[in-house]
Image: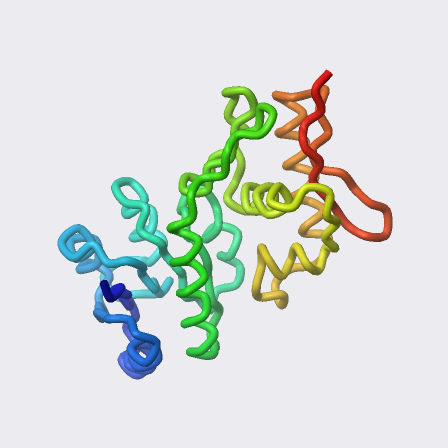
Length: 226
């Protein structure tokens, strides 16, 4: 079945341009310009993914995203020119799946749409030695104890977890977690890793899952069994 992308954008020319590119890639589209119409329409139409502008007439995109997350796992890509909001967009309190910053290339948006849709249908990762990752819910547990990770922390852990022992540089991790490198530095990754390790240590003090490799980056090692 053809997947439907809901475009929530008050700039008609931009919405039309995005719609044209998405249709060329085989998607159906629906356009909404007023924020107050979004939530009822989502409940009615149940689209496959939403492109949601941050600044809208009627209702703010952040409020819309937060309400949708109370009843739906609909993949949401936020569109914003306000780079100071990025951490909030990717936070658990809002639950956006990705973001693009204006100005952007329509081809880039289409590529992001395909990536997020592909990721949304992946099966949750299995349990491994006490660690359980659920990509659908951005949930990580150690022997039943919730790690209470932010979306960014979960994405880092999940990415490293997929290839145990492989070392990733800060740049590679930034490319994965923050596609728009203009707004972050390599120290941002260090900060997230530090917080991630602290949360793991709180429930698994005898395990070191994320290792620092001096001058190279970080890697994941499976839990040890003592």
